[in-house]
Image 1: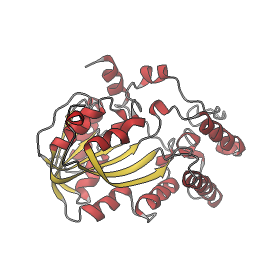
Image 2: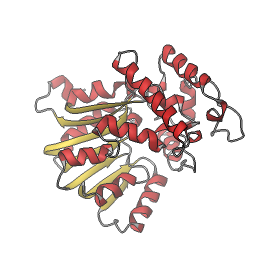
Image 3: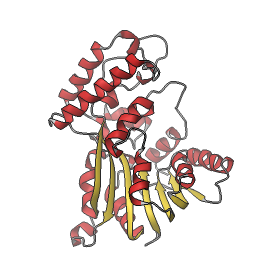
Length: 310
């Protein structure tokens, strides 16, 4: 294992969730907004939308890439997305925890876990009825190889489902977006700006994109080529569904302060919805893009010979 893979493996072996959400996608109010943007219904999640539209009956065998602690696989079996799932992750520690959770849920016979580096792996041909990558592809450097392998491994008529960060690589958002994030953060009352990273009562610092050296030290895989995901995917797959759901502002604006917004407090909920509406309007006006999207794709039937070996 390379040094970069070892660092990433160790980083993702640790469960960093806590009693209060740190990330925007951990908050119930934000998840309802995401659900609405993807499925049209605040109560229908992206996975439920995908299942309802494409998999009204469970497929026989699915593959989950970059599975982490295994939450999707248990959901996928219990909600009849698939009868059996093969799943993998770079982190041996995460895989151990996923196996334990599957065993506790009495699903160990339906989910097969393995430690795999998505930058250097080979899949069998025409094996899977569906492939899922949930917040995994933005950790992959060898995007061309990954999508070639996925294309090869899908059975005829099978689909690839991504729920991904597709924003600027290494989170290097444009200076205008950084200024917008900080102007919004500055007008929030102090109670919302208390840093949950520091957890000492101090206020969150103004946002500034982390230098590349930060990622090399903590997680060399983080958003390594995220800005190229869509263009690379389109070389090998046809896009059936592209459902953007924001994040260009909300992702970093709310990072480290998300838990200060009480889901049971009407004022807090209204404030979050107002910010989310502002972001969505800015997207519609073309001022910003969407950094996150749910994507359904099918393998291209004919590839240019240069693309085949890209």
